Image (cartoon, rainbow, N blue to C red; front, top):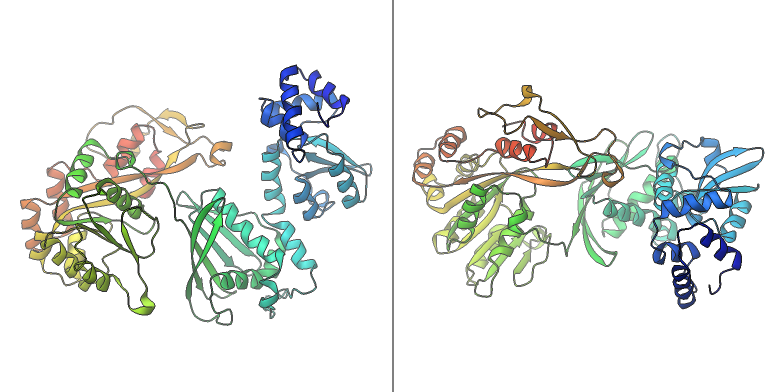
Length: 565
């Protein structure tokens, strides 16, 4: 093997995991790429899982193999190494005994790392082994995300820190905007959120800490961060405001901004919102991947009846199709899916969005801009002079927008939009409350779809249990006697939550003569829903139970997201 000692070759051969051909391949690849580490080459070209490789290496070289999930290093042991060394060498201090520090590493051959750790710790160092990914998780757990950057910021004399009593010191933002440490920390927070699939990041100053939370699959999860973070909250918040081109001196009023970044070869648009609080400004970041992959309509999770009705409505030449639900219920994803379905060469599609969440080929997308007076109503009015076939309006918020949308539909255009109501039937009273005449609503609206998102069970660790019938609240008998629920403690695949990803629940209301008559009579949402149910509509709760019996989600999750049903 090129550039590999005979001893190392013999050790690898002694594991019994590698043939002579595999060892030769590893040597050839390292010769082509001298910067590639030995362990990296072995794992990439040897065809053996990292955990199995490290276990065998430990047996041969006398290193312990550590199950890091069960490890609980003492705080005084963690302090034996600075965070910068921990992150640099990707190691975790495990124990300290008889003047010797044991660290968990993923490379048993790195003498450079061992020498660097010995100098950083100021004492002899021994090695235990664990996979790199597990070490990375443990470091973030015990030290916090970006601990090395926080450590450097505190050590840097140019940085003023927040006083221990909670008062806020002035910070030289011009300097910190160029300083690598603050940039590194904020970037790591964003990168980690993207890696975990978070949709939102919330940075919330508290009395004694700076709390950071990610919203993943609709649920908030606290991020492990260094305890010293609170002393630097002003610097961190100011850095984000600089990135978003916001006034760093204004701390009394809410502000909105945006950040454009490139992460892992993907452009990400980040919407920034600040809010003054008792302990400092709270910042919310919404992550929007510009080039996200579209979910095909067939993959949204419709039942047979709902798919047929929606497919018929979106292909109509005119009318209004409304998607209802609270913020974060997947309305935009569904609308993009419908537009993708009808986006053909002979169809001209225009959209008015705030913000543009996904960029679609073949469609003219317009970003709303309140500062210059470009709102939904004005844009929709301009659309009618652009010869569109189908129009998408991000949201109907007021009477003016609603009336223009109705006028567009009555003049031969198909209009897609969203409305904030709890149920599909609630869309009609909501529009009447805006001041729109019922006869116009009845003439224009072709259908309404209510939507929610529930978390999907992790397919790796879900477990089958008997159905507890006290929770079953439908008139029809249950489809089966057993259901699935999340395994206690989850697994690595689902980050120990028991859930991975989300699935949409739907209720689809098609407007027919009976519904039109009810709208004109100004009947309430309950009465309109009863009519729709008699014609085959399934409620969100019914659709949820169907997905429970298919093993998609759990009873608890359906009860949570459809509690008003």
